[in-house]
Amino acid sequence: MSSNNQSSVSEFLLLGLSRQPQQQQLLFLLFLILYLATVLGNLLIILAICTDSRLHTPMYFFLSNLSFVDVCFSSTIVPKVLAIHILRNQAISFSGCLTQLYFLCVFAEMDNFLLAVMAYDRFVAICHPLHYTVKMTHHFCALLVLGSWVLATLHALLHTLLMAQLSFCGDNIIPHFFCDVTPLLKLSCSDTHLNELMILSEGTMIMVTPFVCILISYLHITCAVLRVSSIGQRWKAFSTCGSHLAVVCLFYGTIISLYFNPSSSHSAGRDMAAAMMYTVVTPMLNPFIYSLRNRDMKGALRKVLTMNLHLPINVRK
Image 1 (cartoon, one colour):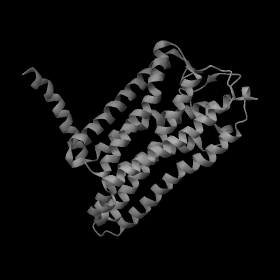
Image 2 (cartoon, rainbow, N blue to C red):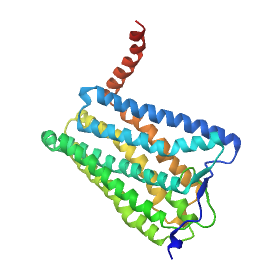
Image 3 (cartoon, rainbow, N blue to C red):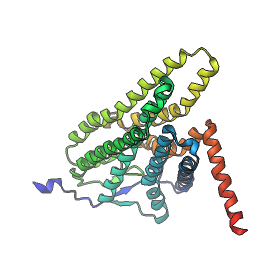
Image 4 (tube, rainbow, N blue to C red):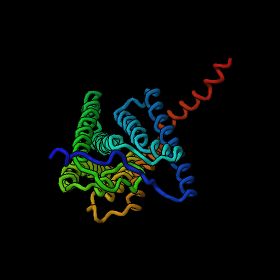
């Protein structure tokens, strides 16, 4: 009986985004550029927040955590994609596939929770400005982030352990560029009803709850802003939330279309396009979205870049 839980497949083959050599070269270059932009952009955000005392506020504390998670999120997937192209080896071990799945779940949920926490921060700042410093203390902000890590880790452990219990005794080709839940369930020769039930119950709850919190926060924010008589003050209040709303729409739009549909309705091409959006494109866009319309952030980034440019000159002197 115990052998039923053991997988006879020792490795999987990741087909990637395309089998055409010319398209593969273009996609390799695209992934490399997007990954470098993701790492550089998000690390600059973290460095700017750490070095500028004006940005030592709850909003930027959460943003620095989001940038760190985005770097880790992309690093879970993109280096393997690049290695497959360079080494011409599409294989990934069974344990390596489950490890990638685990970290994918952790960082995806951390993105989810941090977006909700940032929405709550904006809600308190706009709807209860006089109580902001009392409510959003350093201790409370740290607890929010720590709680997010704990919940994300438990969620990832649940789905990874459930996946480890499945048998993979036939086809080992994954028509994807990373080990994701949906293609793995399709390859399994075991009964996957429990996995799908947990995705549609626990997975839906842990994804939808933060999303509902975001909607409620912005409903209160909208009502509070509309009560302001000055058009200039209204625009200023909405502009502080615009960047966050753009990231929320981009992230949740692709997640919902990818995971919260029956497995029979999925197609490999659509799944890979949606997965590329939230695993590669969104983490790359976040630094640009949050910095382009933010004077404080642009000033801090300018200071960091200026400091780095002058450093080699001072060393030579």
